Image 1 (cartoon, rainbow, N blue to C red):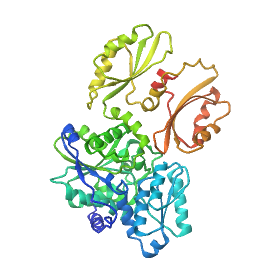
Image 2: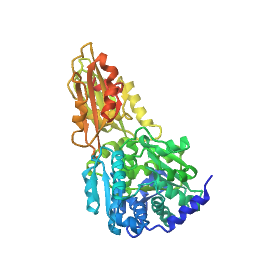
Image 3: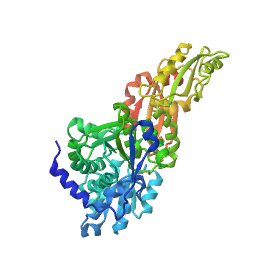
Image 4: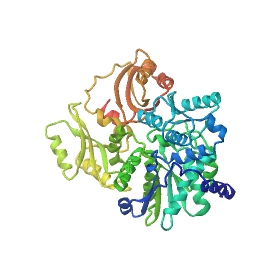
Length: 515
């Protein structure tokens, strides 16, 4: 049940929030092509058009504007590797306040440069956000600075809530649902407080990455809970714990949480570009990805649906990777491992089976005298039940080609298609064993050396593939060979290194193409 006095207090704060000295009222843009395709009226709130290309300027400035004269003279500090940092920097410059921004050393140069360009002092320290936050709190104590929280602050929540005020003024006609990206909860709690107080029938749907779903975890537990680890594909919403103040609002006002994967986010990036020519960061497209999934899962037709494009601070280097994954995110491409006889004419026969299909990629190298594994990407017609993909697989199998579907296989999508073609290795000695792991390495000098030097000297790296995606972390695939009697200690060694990892030895793509 809604806490009406709590919502009323936030509505008053939102109505008096001081954001428009630096923020603009962003447009609520229709998405005509997507609306026609999905059978609903879809609009998107263009927070990517703010001066810092993100909604974060609203909450940051409102918090800075609430400081006392004494606090302004001392200055402020925050820890951030992204949009909050730029919001604090610009807001502090506007108000003539000293701002110190502590950023992890892995922060991409483009973000560091953007913060410095807006007049803030940047301190690079630590290998992750928590280490940067710890140092920011030390500076707060040592220098008497005021900490500006990214989301767990009433003034920040109120600043973000001005987005809801604009949406209700801009939208012509009723609203059925608003889809909001969720990181620490400042944005969705501000929007929920304002909308639910005035129009409780409007649904507020939070959207989170599958591997950073802290609001979903909190709602299930009945209280904020800390995730063991979070994915970083959408860095802007990669938060391990929902804020305490946001959760007080959200536990009674949010109508649901949808989780989305990397492919669905990439597909939403493309949708936003095609309808608005805006180019969001992956976290900026999270809400639209959730909106599309909501329509698909519930068979929604004829409704007025709104989502938030929360930001456009994307690294140009990431675009290639996003483009690669878009077709998979739209379910327009199947990635298949097809087994063909290793004899003359096999490719011709396979191509005849696929003659009415568009082949998007094909990789092969000789590895065995009797059979060959071919990695092939093929365009398919998207649908909720993937009927065309299943029909394609049936066609191949009926023609005598065994198929393994790798369309949802993360390792295959990120690494395997770039590795097929390596030389076949001789069999391992009986006393040796090989394990395959997928890692996220921090993008900083020494990351590889740190990994290698902590491995035992008698272990061998038999495969290594790294891809830079213009993010704070690189995606790495590593095969390790070790004596069988040392196999049990492998995870203990990897835990000491401190990088996120996933065991992939049992992944079918490894057996088909790399073992």
